[in-house]
Image (cartoon, rainbow, N blue to C red; front, side, top):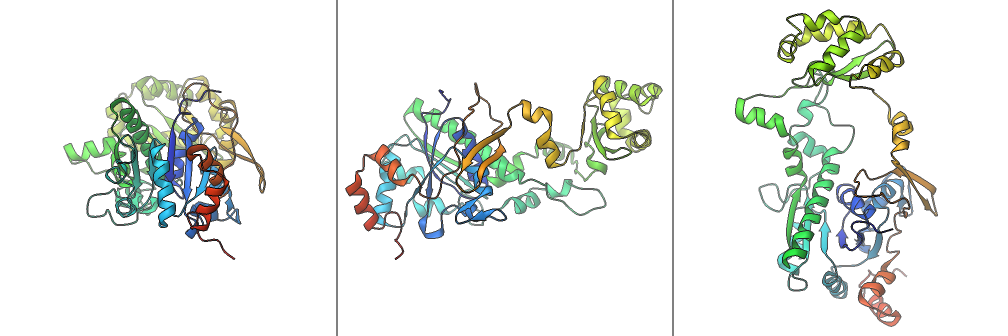
Length: 402
C-alpha cells in the first residue's frame, strides 16, 4: 500500500506526549519515524508512565508510538554523536520536544547541522520556544492552559478555573509541529535549503484563543466562564440537563432555533420579540435558557434525541469515554485500530484522524527500546556486524551493564 509520506525519514528525539503525538500521525501516513532514545535515562519517559507500565512497556507509550522504530544512541558520546550526524545526512528532518534552550546545547538546530545536509529540517517543539523570557523554562500542558487563559474560561461561573479533561495544548502543539515540519520538508525539497521550525506549546495555546482574542484586542471584551458551558454569543448553544442525564444542543443558525422550539412544542417562542433573532436571544439569554431547561427536564435524553435529530437540530448526548468508544459512528469511521504486543496481547487504540487517501489498515505496535538499532544502521548507513560491535564497545549506544 502506497502511503502519502512513505518517502520521509525523520530522526525524532521525542518523549512523553506532545512530541510523539505529533509524529504518530506522520507515522500512520507512512513516514519513517526513527525514535532516538537516550540509554542513560531509560529512553522515552512515556515507557514508564503508570498505571499500565512494566519493564519499559506501557499502554501510554503504545498510544503515541505505533508504526515507529526505535534506536538507542548516546549523543553525549563522541561515537554516538558521529552516528547521529551520519544519520542526519540521509534524513529529511530532526524533530525534538525538549526545553527551548536545549536544541542549541545539543547542537541539533539547522545552523548546527546544515553542513551535513543543507536540506535538513530541524523542528523543535518546546514549552515556550527558543526565544523570549520563558525560553529556558520547562513547559507542560497544565501550566500552559493556565498561562494562556484557557482555564479562566472553562468550568462553571461560580466554580474554580478548570483544566480541560484532555491535554489539549500538548495534542494541539503536536499537530502544529507536524504541520510545520511537513511544510518545511516540502520547501526544502523544492528549494534545496532546510530551516528551523521553532514551535511552542505557548504559541499554540495563545493562537487557539482565536476570536476571543480578536474580540478583546479590538473591543475590550473579556471572556468569562459560562453557565453549563454556554457559547459566548450563540443562544441556545450549551449543555442542558434532561430528566436523566445531559444533552448538548446548538442553534448556530436561525433555522435551527425555529426547528428546536417546534420540537419543544413552543413554536410561538420564535415569534416573540425577546427571542426572535440571535441578537435578541443573546440579550435575553438567561430567560431563554431557563425556559428551555424547564422543557427539557420533562423527558429523558433517549426520548429527546430522536425528536431533535429528526427535526435536524444539532445535538448530541454527553457521553462518557466508554460510551464514546462504543458509538456506532466511531466504529463505522474505523477509529479503533489494533496491534499485537508480546506483553499486552491485542492492543486496541484510537486511530489518527488525519486522512489523506485511503487510511492504512495494518498497524505495527510501538517499538521496544532500541529494538531496531542494528537493523536501522544497516539499512541507512550500511554498517555491518563488526562495525556495530565496535560502536557498541565504544559506548555509542550507552554503557553496557555488567
